[in-house]
Amino acid sequence: MQDEGAQLMSRPREPEEFGPRPVYEDARPKPAAPVPPTPRRFWRRRGVRIGAVATVLTLAGLAILALVWLETGTHGMLVGSGLALLPVPLLIAGFLWLDRVAPGPWRYRIFAFAWGAFAATLVAMLANTFAARWIATGLPTASSREADLWGMAVVAPVVEETAKAAAILLLFLFRRHYFAGLVDGLVLAGIIGTGFAFTENILYLGRAYEENQTFGDSGPLATVTVTFIARVVFSPFAHPLFTAMGGIGFGLAAMTLASQRVRRVLLPTAGLLLAIALHSLWNGSAVMNGFAFLGAYAFVMAPVFGLVVWLSVWSRGGKLRTIRAQLPAYTHAGWLVPAEPVALSSFRTRKLARTFARQAHGEEARRAVADYTRSATTLALLRAQATRGHPPKDYAEREQALLARMWSTKAVAQPALTRAAYTTTPPHPPHWPMPGATRVPGHPPHGGKPVPPPPTRG
Image (cartoon, helix red, strand yellow):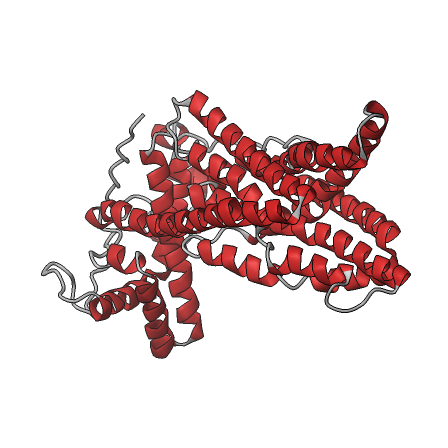
């Protein structure tokens, strides 16, 4: 018996030799079967939407290219394209400078320019042509001057500004998170207007070139020269300025409380009406005479342009002030160090932090600081949007995603930003950590000290 017991202990036992399985093992809950993801509707698929928008814009681009070619010919279209392209980089660079605090996605900028250059211009050309024929047949007693005044001062502004504002409305409805304030609407509208002006200038300059070739005009008073000076040199900002009125309206609507539904409708409508009024005044003065044109330019267009530039720069600084006001909530929760809200609210300090990171750890570290800065800026604007009373439905998920993204690069970004803040913001508050000894939060991105909810106002 002793040898048999030793033999049993020396060999591996079979499962049934352990006796019946304990009850608690049988009662252990089985893992739930994975729930298959609900298939999205065909139209809700990202690839389908992008493909549909790209197809529409491509077809509009081909159509407008054909129409411009029929109007100007090959040589006129080439000359007009070269001359019309000259102000585009300067205008786009100006709008990108305004959007420097929290740059929007490039796909929205490309969509805005393509919509203005192709879709809005195509709608305007077809509608204006139809309106000109209707005026000629519906008002047979009107002179050609009166017909031009009706077409350019009444019909064209309504059609063109409505067509351009349609793109802003689409993004406002379906990409609501893009609109964090006035600057976003203004930048988007300005890029749309720049694209529209580019195509329209090709048409006008191409026609002028063909006219010069037909009649043999040349010199400083040639039609193409006068057209170039009037449209490209003196008023390249005209269409961006008109469309900016609607963009400002949508930007202000994005800043209103969720309960102020009437105001959120009236502000974009008022912006569109103001855009139509400015456009009508501009076109009407051009049809009347040179003195009316110069008066409208000096006493209306130039002051409005200066006011919009001032408002844009002030609103751009407002984004920096929002960063400094909203990020301390994450400092108190341990996600940021005290110097970061100050550093992130200054372009100079941001640039210096990227320089410090590159000098210490190379180009990859510089990109990490830039990514951290973008995420922190988006986080501050997201919290400000919730504070105004209309947080996105996925506010918590987006907040956690941004914090997790910042967490992945904090080891490089926080010391660089703290050192930059010490360099550019003396004297330093006593509670700031010393450079090189930056306190790092001790909790993981999902499940640490909670951030207090934003104080909503409506």
